View 1: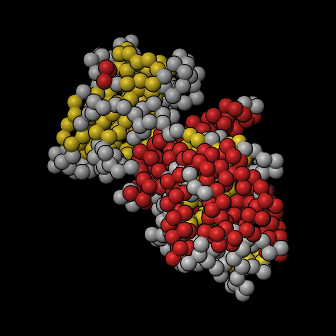
View 2 (view 1 turned 90 degrees about the vertical axis):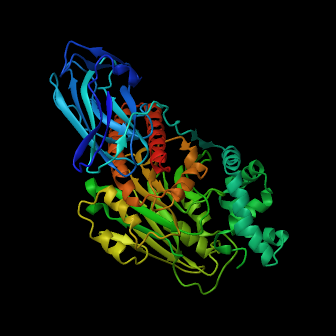
Length: 580
């Protein structure tokens, strides 16, 4: 093996080569495979790397040093046998998350080996985002399958004077630990409170207790002003009470005061910037897929994303984005295939109401109880009619999309509700100039990547856009294959959660992804190719999950989803972090 130096040649200069002979293979690490220097079938030289699968994700890998911002090309000769049984045809790939992950961790990969029983040339290109990259040679992935590789070459493209040398450190990035928000309200609340105690204490102090003290409002008065919220919760969602008490106890704050905080902090209801949501009609999308998006504009509180399954009769499982200090919904999608958002706006308020449920609580109730746009509308109408909605001096502007492809806009204040279904190609909740035009003029059929990328348009993504969520609702399997891609803040790299999953990666739930996103110096153009590749890998996962579900192997399908989300989270967090 030899490392080199790009010297004053702006085209293509080799920075790493390995002929894969017997004396060079010891530098390669392996996962779920055996490697040896084979001499029976060789492309050039005296040997090649022979990779024999031992059960899944068979990969040989090596870690190379790279320079962030520069582009590299990988070329390798490969050979697969026609006797192999695996459906993954062997390839080369690169990852920043280690060499042991699944394809979801790849930052880029080559085409598959196109023909059997002959040597073929594979290639890929990638832009480095960190100071190291794992070069991966992946086998055909069925136990006993044999795949061969020879003559690896890595080149620096177009940039002179760049050193890229091998690194002896081959420790992979640790896996993304998952947290299960599944079970009874107290069980879920205890986990949330223990994990997010710091955010709970900070947000209660900064956005509730300190402003109340400055206004001369006592804690006793805060409790009194929360009485209607609590009464509605006891009537319509009593599990929220038990959950909140468990959160507060685990976080070490006063349970009654925390419940008052949950009910009154948003819009300062205890005292008496518009977000943006949009959708495209499935008539105009790729394969009739159903898309929904919201950017949340607000104060820079720690953001989190989660999938929650409260095992109370009649309560839906759902995915949502919220402040880490409270289980609420700023945007959501549920297992019935209903996505929704609640934004500032709506009808002008003539009679302000400060006691009751704010739209963050009402949206959670809709997530838990409604199955489509019509049922969501009925819930809003009921709460406004009965005096349960409290929005202060602002109305609410809602957007809902369901598994039938309906797009529903709802506007309300404390006394009236108006609604309109939108059959046109695209709808955006707020006029955003160039971004609105861009959404309406997306080339047809509209793909998910193009739809998602509108969220980062400068006309709709602002410094205060603290989170964003792009949703694709599955018509066939809404409770399993509906997926939400969450970016915190909205301009940052997106992370996935599947409805069929059981676990939420801890780094999404505790605000770690949010903090990494805020600190990242890269502009969003760095994230788009990473996301586009992840979206393509998502389609492969979906095909596997559909097969498992058709065969009645539900537990295996859930594990496949959780494993994929964990691996993708690990890879994206590695890419998001500062160059190392």
